[in-house]
Amino acid sequence: MGLLLLFNGFNGLIQGAFYALMALGLALILGLNNTINFAQGAFMALAAYFSFTLTPYVGFWGGLIIAPLLAGALGLAIETTLVRRLYNRKDPIYTLLLTFGLAFIMQDMIRTIWGAQGKPLAIPQFLNQPLSSTYFFLTGYRLFVVGVALAGTAALFAVLRFTRIGIRIRAGNSDLETISALGVNIYLLRSANFVIGIVFAGVAGILAAGQLGLNPNMGDALIMPAFVAIVVGGVGSLVGSLLGGLIIGLASGITTAFYPAASEVVIYIIMGVMLVVRPRGLMGQEGLFE
Amino acid sequence: MSAVLEAEGLQTYYGKSHILHGVSLTVGEGELVALLGRNGAGKTTTMRSIMGLTVPREGRVKLFGRDTTGKPPYRVANLGVGYVPEGRKIFGHLTVHENLLVPPQTKGPWTIETVYQLFPRLAERRTSKGGRLSGGEQEMLSIARALLLNPKFLILDEPSQGLAPVIVQEVMRTVGRMKGEGMSILLVEQNAFLALELADRAYVLSDGEVVYDGNAATLADDRARMEQLAGVSHAAVDIRH
Image 1 (cartoon, one colour):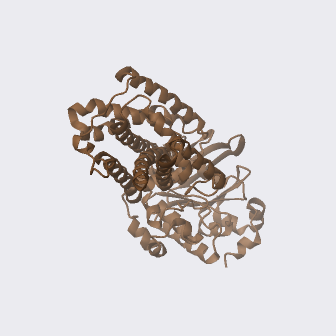
Image 2 (spheres, rainbow over the protein chains, first blue to last red):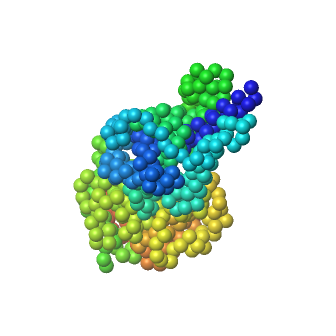
Image 3 (tube, each protein chain N blue to C red):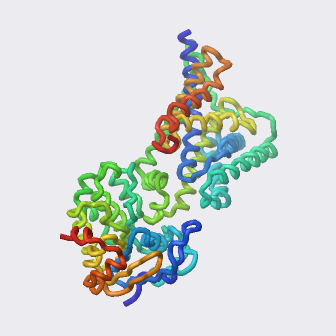
């Protein structure tokens, strides 16, 4: 039982690391771009397919770096041509509908280019080995996923804490108008922020594909939990989104040990309880929802 | 004297409410102009129209001879316009130092080091969160932030609002010093006497229209006129001493 719990708990944490990466990207874009980006899952899938195509030429590692950047470049094109036009409409419903539509278009593009059939994403052989026979579930790849999630998160928080662009993103999250009046080009800042969010989605997508394989709808399975992570962690707080992702991943993993059938629904139960008890989420701003 | 600001016939709305009804004003080089008026007269809206924060539906804004009507605020700011907004608008969850890293670094005498010299209190509190500062410290931070753009033109919206008289004096001394250094300044104040002490010229707004345009000293001497125009109370007079 102890081993089973450890196994499922660890699985849950890996899942949570995915959710946290996804949720961070979503939360960034929700904050500064005031956009509920429903296409985030499609960007994930797209980056994974990019890496699938690139791997024969640049290897897994090259793909892991280049594919999210390609997805980011597409994100930049979409932000500057489409999303930006809707910033002046205060109601987020407009960008939500836009990105919802974009998600369908992108998924169909993937289906057209790469086919509807699932595909495996080749990962380096040494990452596939279990670390020991007792802890057979601790493959190198799983540790690697957690490592990348940690590194990505640390890098993001370092940028937000120590660089001018990061400080401006934080300032702009609370008062976009004032940073503009202080001379900050908010169009450029919002584009940069959008791209960072998409790159995060891309990395998460490739990591997921390494484990679960590729299919055009792969983003759908991960985007809902990412939204749940944001609600649990608190809208407007990146640390909250990170915690929210880990918590629901862990909860889902542990539930699997006891009652596998409830492992998916448990995250929605947590969200429901949170919305009743503390609508602002773990670290959300006071007064936003209560 | 060349004009730093020429605003002409500004008609500005918030949604359907018509706030400014054809406001025109100018600020000359090196001039300190006071903009006075009762609460809700349209002073802040005038400032916002100049900065591009609320785009006027009609009328033109020219800064340093260039038409900036409809330009986004960051473009206006980067022409060399420092803006100290009403209510200071400090980023409360950022530290003092981080607040100072928001505006772009520009060439000129004002750097983070020199604004710390100007306001030593801010240097002492550089790691404190903006939201934990006193009103006076927040005002200094808001002014410091605007100075980092090395502006040729400074717009101050009610810098004395909610501050203790001693602090108000200090803020006004700073404004006077900026004028002494040749900066052109547009100063919005409820406390008319304070503003008129420093100002060369004054405008009085009432219900979104300019009702006085002229010499600051003349207006300051004519107390009856001032009470009628700007609703200056005797309490405001007392605060001066």
